[in-house]
Structure formats: structure tokens, C-alpha cells
Image 1 (cartoon, one colour):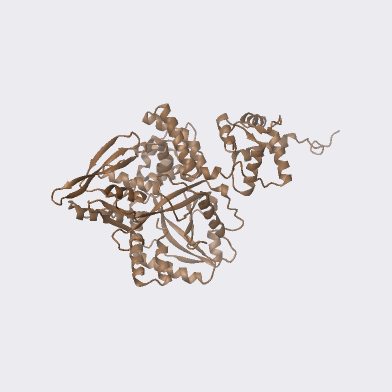
Image 2 (cartoon, rainbow, N blue to C red):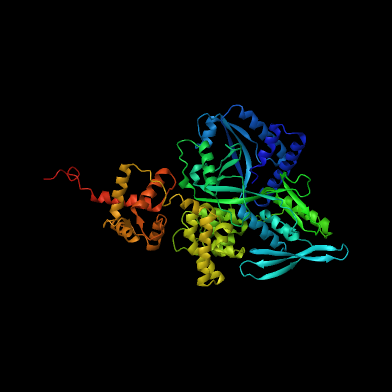
Length: 620
């Protein structure tokens, strides 16, 4: 939340931009800081303070950045979260031990806000519904409705023809005023109003990656305001993992943006520049990756149509269509207020002043920082699960807990997890339907964050998610298969699974020494007893059972499928060597088959060793 705010102020202050630019930045930052403060107040369960460190590697940068950040604090005034401060090299390394030590001068820490964006979006929609709004998802505009205004003698927008994307049903929505707030799709709606309207949206792709939590401290982020190509990179703790990003590259508008491998590698390269050489930043540690589209806009009201608007714009067309475009998450409320004020004025609508400053969002009212303790005590939930429910649902967490099934274990009493390493429980799937979830993708991406945290874990949870939703929504077997396939495709393309799996392809270069090839050949033949040149699930299961390890057939099939490049149901020796080469280069990490075979080999070697004479007591 507001990660770029500081850049807006100190670059202009320290860069010597003329007064007009400075005033513009001042007003933008002032507004954003006010909205950040309001957001922390109205959704305390979804937002939190986060200290962010700027490591300094050149002495002259220390006063440069320090001056900019102190101005940032001054602009915030009474809404300053906490004062920024300078750290010595020793203290910086104590708080962020993964930092590169060489040439480190010290660091500056400032405070910003962080929020759960998907849950925040949902909380806003649910709050609107609570106050009487009619909301709908999976609904698209087919075309705008118009009528001739008898007084003005020209066409005016009076509604929209809409389509339910899931059922295909179309219907009309009549309105005195239509507002186009469609982000990257702004121009599509503007052209429905008038085909001659020029494009004002200049979309930019921002790629983020998620890597394991051990890459960053639990409560300290990292910001690089000047990367090798001038882009800003952040490196933050998020949902007990680490999130890094973002890129900023021109892109085409699409409802399904896909993270590109070059963007993922750019972020990894920049991360390596700031971490100690002891920390090996591996491509294989990327657990999920995604791309979002930032709708940068040019102002249609401006004579200079080439310049990018640094904030947001509100435009009213001749037909009365109100367009709000640009802006950022932090200022969503003030953007909405400005848009509605413009709509009320342009259409002579009866309305009082805005009341949204300080209006608590869904779940905020009954939330307290210690409510998770009651969830543990009253329902028998695990502490980690209770903390997750409290921070995701606020006061509504009790409803989720009430829906949780008894586990049959001594502890936890209720709350069966969807996957063992994440705190998401099955009752959240049921509750997601109450929150208008219509698809399995909604659950893994827009109600929980599982798909954004770990694509493999999300894929493992999908069958159970589909079963629960199918029972609640009376899906047919065909619909359940379709949901499962659609969700897997979403993970494969939009959540980075494709980019991850492409690290191991049939054209991968094998960079193993002869000694390593010999060692892996020995390991492979412990499974391939008949020297077939390949192994199957039957081979793996036979070896595992010989060392008293039992894995069900479906899981084994998934494990081998990750490595089976030509998808013929077996893993050839060449494919196995490519896997081990990719593991060696860091392109693949935590591969289940590689770890399983290594562990099995060690167990077999241990059982095959002869008992030494010394250990037996020397014999007779």
C-alpha cells in the first residue's frame, strides 16, 4: 500500500524539479498519505504497518535519501505512521541478516502500510452491499444503452446491456448515470460510447514473484529505489512468504495476463544484488509468479495528449458517460468520492456529502488484535489458523469457525486444512460461496491467496475445493471436471506454473560432470532394476515399500508427472539427468521425485551395508 509514495516526493525534491512539479507531487503525496491513514483505520484487520529498509552502499546517498524521507515524514504530519530512522551497518545486518555486507554503509528505515488486496476488494464490495448497493460479479457490458434527450436534442447514455458470463443470459440495467471504472479496459467502454474516442489508457505490466519466507525477516521489507534500469524493486514479507517485484513494461490489454520469464529473471537478478552471497537466490525457489496490468492514462481534457497523467483523471463525455481512470490502490476512496461528486454535478443527482471517511469496512467492527485467542479457546482452532481467520475476515471469522468440521483429533478440535503447510481450512470454501464465489479460481485466488503463494499447493487443494463447492452448489460431475480443468489452466498460465515447469524441458542442457552422471546412474538403477531405461510409478512404489514408505498411487503419479517431459507415463534416464542438472543450477528446487529418490537411495545403502566386525564385538 503506497509503496511508491516516497518516490513521488523525494525524487522531485532532491532532483530540483521546478515549483509546479513539486507542488503537484506534494498534493499527490499528501492525498495518498491521508488515504493510507484512513485505510489503516477502516480495515485494521486487513492492513498493517510495515517498516521498509533502504540499504545504503555509498556515503553520499545517506544524506540524499535521508532528506527525502524526512520530507516524506513532514508531509505526513499527524498521519505519519512512525518516524523514519537511520541504522548503522551493524544494526542493519542485525535486522536484515540476509543483506549483502560488502560496501554496506548503513540503512534508512521508513514506515508504510501493507494490505491484503484481494480481501480488501471483497470487503469494499460487501460493505457496499450492506448499505444497499446491488453488486454482481462475472458480469460484462455488451453495449451501452442510449436515448435522445428531448431537451438537449442529442443522445445520452442511460444504461447498459449486460451479460452473465457464467450462464450467458443478457439483461438491461437502466440508470440515470453510468460510470466507467474499468481499469485497463477503460478504452473499450469509451469506444462503446463513441467509436471515434482515442485511446487514453497506456497499460503497463507489473510482475511479482513469491519466494520462501526465509529470504526476508518476518517484519522488515526492502526497497531499491534505483535498480539497474531505473525501476523500483521491493522485497517484502507477505503472508509468511516473501514477495518481490515489480516490473514496469508496456503490455497489451488482456483479461488473462501471463508473467514472462525475462521479467521473473529480472526481479531475481535485482534481488541477488542486495542479498549476501551466502544466500543462493535460485530460480527454482519461485513458488508463484503473476502479472498485473497498471492502467496508466493520458488526460483527454489536456491539450498535451502524449503526457502520462501521474495521478488519476475524471472525464465526462458529451453523452454523459463518466470515466474514472488511472490512480492507485491507496487512493481508491478519494478517487470514488471525486468521481461521484462529478457525476452528481453533471447529472443533477440528489445526493449529500460523502460519508466514507472513517466508514468501517466489512469485518472491521468486531475485530481486535487479540480476537484470535478467543477463536482458539472457543472453537479449538490451531493458533496459526485462528490468526489467519482473524486477519482475513475480522469479526466475520467467528462465522467461518462455526462452519468448521470436527477433525476427530485431540488437536485441533475443528478446522481441517486444505493443504498442510498453509492455514486455509475447508470451511473457508463454504464461506467463500456466501461471499459470492462462483468458481474454484475464485477460492484459490480471490477469497484465499493460496494460488498466489504456491501454485503446487493450490493444485493439490483443488480436488477438495471442487468437491466442497460442487456439493454446496449442486454441480454436475461434468461441471466439476470443467472447474478443475479451468483452475489448473489458471495456475499453469497466470500464476507462473508454466514458467516454472519450462525450467525443465526436453531441450535443457545437461551440465553434469562424468562423476555426477555416474552417481545418478547408480541411483536411477536402484529403481530401474530391469534396466529398461525408464521408471514408472510401479518401480518407485516397489522401492518405497521395501523401506517401509507408503505413498498412494495418485500422489506418485503427480510426482512423476512433474518430471515426465514427453508425458508418456514414465521417466527416462535422460529426463532424470535433466532434472538433476536443473536442481544443480538452481532452476528447480524442492522437487519431490529428486528428494524421494535420494532419500530412498540412502535408506537402501544403509540396509545393504554389512555389519562390521568391530561393531559385532570382534567375533569368536
